[in-house]
Length: 281
Image 1 (tube, helix red, strand yellow):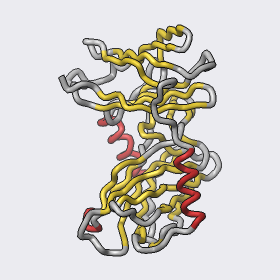
Image 2: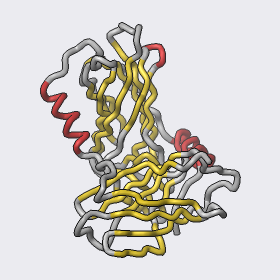
Image 3: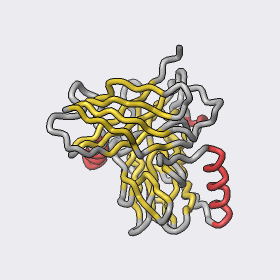
Image 4: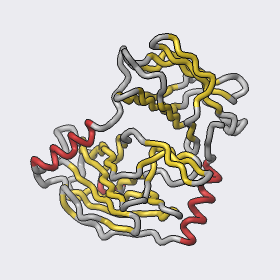
């Protein structure tokens, strides 16, 4: 059965977790590579480059997990807390994008999560607005780190927009970006997709790479709070793969028109992530 967790249920879970856990607030650190903020399950920091001529700031949220602990993909699966980043509007910085390496399914008794059980780096892009000349750009990161329970882990960072980046920082950000899923290409892409009229199934047709193995790992991030990872009715015809994903947990009132979901497909040594942009009409 395809798994999902709704936003209201996740809100309740996070609220319950917060009652029995401690949110860790880190002291802000000012540098291109910030100080580590620590919690019971691990630590995190931000590595960033100075703004380019357009004000774009490339950075990485680096998470170093302790052994046995996990954190989550853009949608965590049956439970958990997805990573969130919130720049301080007063510092004139906005979040343009946050990217995610290929996750894995992590089973814990009857719960299956989508995430990471090893240290992980999330590349991010910030945009520095015109007219803001302060040195520091403030950023707050909020993640969940879990062992037997989930601990909300929140940390605030100041990144220095005036400091020069070191060669190591540049190399670290480049290597973090190199570990991301590839963009769609002619030999690996989504060909078609649709939601059935009763809103219970998502149908997808993929074009896989040359020599792709029979099996593929497929993750779909639907509207906020919903993740799907168990494709069914798979039909393989050479390099084309068609399947359906059970999405019957969606609210009856949900309207996919004009919405954007995400799909990630791991086929052999390659992984591709693409938006599923539903037509507005």
